Image 1 (cartoon, rainbow over the protein chains, first blue to last red):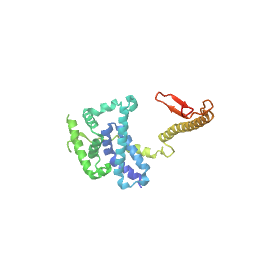
Image 2: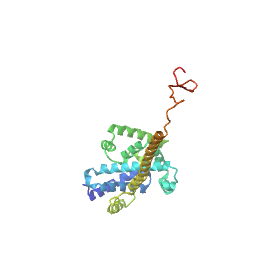
Image 3: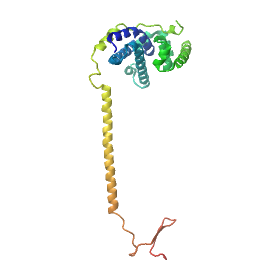
Image 4: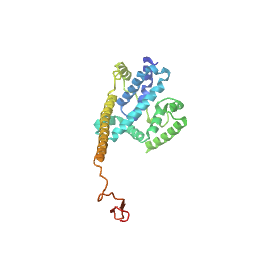
Length: 161
Length: 109
């Protein structure tokens, strides 16, 4: 069973890498914090069934899934003919804060397929060894390696454009 | 640090995250109190669609059986009597190439 101390220790340990991972998806601090808190709240609700020794992988899996869902939802809202104020796409402050360098990085990441983007960001921020990361994403280690290689090459091309 | 990682400097999350998480965990669970609003709305919507559909189906079936019964009764009550010419029933009935009907009282005619 997961204890409150165990959960909070995991939060302190993982908050920064999780935030950095999510920030390169959503580029909005509040959204990233909400998703992290959602993940920890979900885990806390199921604490009776959770092995404290495996909490890091569980947190990452939960955050990755919540991030995917949120990204899909955002894409759907972008596609729908709704005013930006309603979809939350209108964030002038966020655009101003990003700066030229991050805007270029965001545009390059946006042009990557979602799976490639996920692999690149997890490789940089997750800190989990590749074989465990592959099992976390439920793909073979070789697939992860080739996907990462192709994604990094494409991202370099996009950044050099 | 690899060239790729230089594009991804590590950022500091907004302060006070752990405090906000504690507050959130200490709040009474929204889900424990019963049905979640979205699930409840989905169930209500399903009922609102299913019940009229079911009523319509029952009504249609009833109408069909009434119509079949009426058709049977009409056919039974208004059956055309057998053809009689000069008190005799024709022996042969033919439909020729010009879609004319021919009645024969005797085989010789």
